[in-house]
Length: 150
Image 1 (tube, one colour):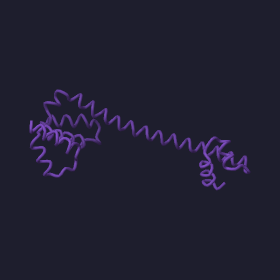
Image 2 (image 1 turned 90 degrees about the vertical axis):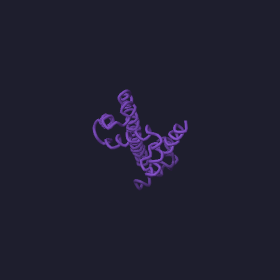
Image 3 (image 1 turned 60 degrees about the vertical axis):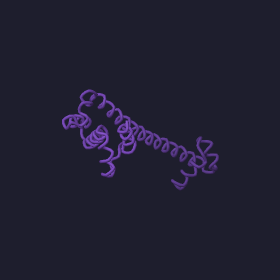
Image 4 (image 1 turned 120 degrees about the vertical axis):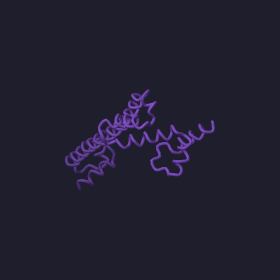
C-alpha cells in the first residue's frame, strides 16, 4: 500500500513532466516501475512526434525495449487510438480557431466595405447615422473612417 501511495504521488508530481530533476526522477521511479515505464513511453512518443505513423512506431519500439511491453501487447490498439484521438482533438481545435479567425477577418472586410460605401454615399451623415444605416456600432464606423481617412 505504501508503494502504491508513493506511485500515485509520483504520478501527480511528475505526470507529463519533461523536466523533472534527476533526483526526483530517481526517487519516484525507483518506487514505481510502471510510472517509470510510462514516462519512458511518453518520451518515446515525443521522440517520434514529427514522423508519419509516430504513435505506431513508438508503441513498437517500446514493446521491443520491454517498456510497458505486456500492457502494449494486450492494449496496444487502444493506446494508439487514445493517442490518435487526443492528437486529432488538438488538431481539430487548431483548425477551428483558424477557421474562426478567417471568418472574423471576412466579416470585418465586409463590414468595412459597407461602412466605407455608406460614408461615400452619405458624406454628411454622422457616425451614429452611418452605424444605424449599416447596422454596426459607432466604434466600427470610427475605426473605418480612421483606417481609410474618410
